[in-house]
Image (cartoon, rainbow, N blue to C red; front, side, top):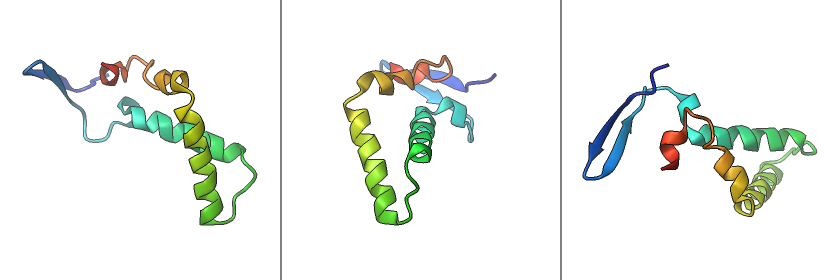
Length: 82
């Protein structure tokens, strides 16, 4: 699988990714985690309840750095952990 190219500029690495590559984006792991958590909740029927449930999940993640770090364990996204 092509994970794009790497260029080092002034001690910083720049990773050029394909235009659509969700499997290479750690944010997609957060999105999947949030969607899974929302699916386990009692159905929310209003935007306000949905926002409240999402905020609660994100607050829980703030207290769980090991869970957030797990998003970066896949070899395809380790580039973003450095």
